[in-house]
Length: 499
Image (cartoon, rainbow, N blue to C red; front, top):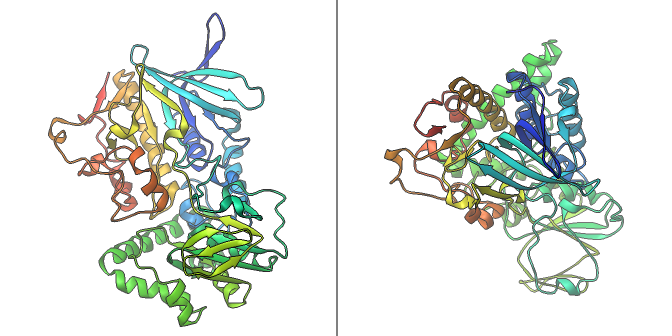
């Protein structure tokens, strides 16, 4: 593979070729570029990003208080020590990613404002052909690549998910989704309703409560939270002992992952005990009647993500009277607010719909394999990163019960090893295929809804690939198993068909 891109001129335009094209300059794409640059020096690559800069989620979301809901010792890259507080703001995460780009000279490989519209695979040429539209000029550019690395995430960045409620057109106030937060939104002295019960609502409400007349979090059903200090005592102690930050990062990272593994296991084996422990964290801030009414979920822990609440700021806002929670269902919007099914009316100047994402499979790109449109839902996944019948393509889909970046790093290692293996074999193409002994196995949904069932996933499950009943043919969502299993994958297994 060549170290620089090659150009091929046709009668009408220039087609640029790269060994690898990475789609997306978020946390996964920047990590992928690092792994290529360090593990595969000499590989030509480019990162294509739709937005005007890097960051992905942390660039898209600009609502007040935007912060991580995973600790940065594990959400950060394994190769880049994190030195701040465990829960970080979007600005801090962007600064961290910028250091990775600058320290490793990745910037020259990233092209912003490039929205990919189509990706076509040709078995005759063993190439992906991509078309992308430049946002600055409107020009369509064409590129080819041997290998496509999808790091675009899993949701549509341009718009969030807002249900259609009766009467929305009658409402005279402003309806806002956190994903498209207006820069000039004036909420000072206003009554605000935040619809939702997840991490976004729990982050946004306390961030604006001090400036609003009042913030009401309206939720259909409660969710679990973990309040605590935004600090890591082990990291702080190691810094007092003047331990090198590289060692601190690795030690703290391992300790957090060890604790998370135990917590996940206990949530499955003794859910009621874990539930009471989580509720005890809320009871430290709020009276029992509020805990029972608004913070006692009916599902067992870890069927949905559990957000960390730094210093219990949401609960402190409720206790201070600047925020409140209402658990009810929406009957309809009115001119001045929301009528609930209980008959109560909530008045609001601004309604924020923190109601989730729109699942986006493969980046809204028109995919085709040898002239046939790719129906992603008809494929079977190989370990949640490759797909039967789809050559030379990897998709980074992270973890729900652990930090996304943990898997991005593991897949970065896998891609580097796979490309090296293909080069040694003289193979131009690798396509996952069910082994003879796997062809009669039951086909299941992408994720078992009994174990994890957030709304965006349930709404879009029909768009996602199928899973099998063996670990090779599913995304196990188990980092603690995959950290050993992925590096041990036999690249000559019959599941990989080389040509």
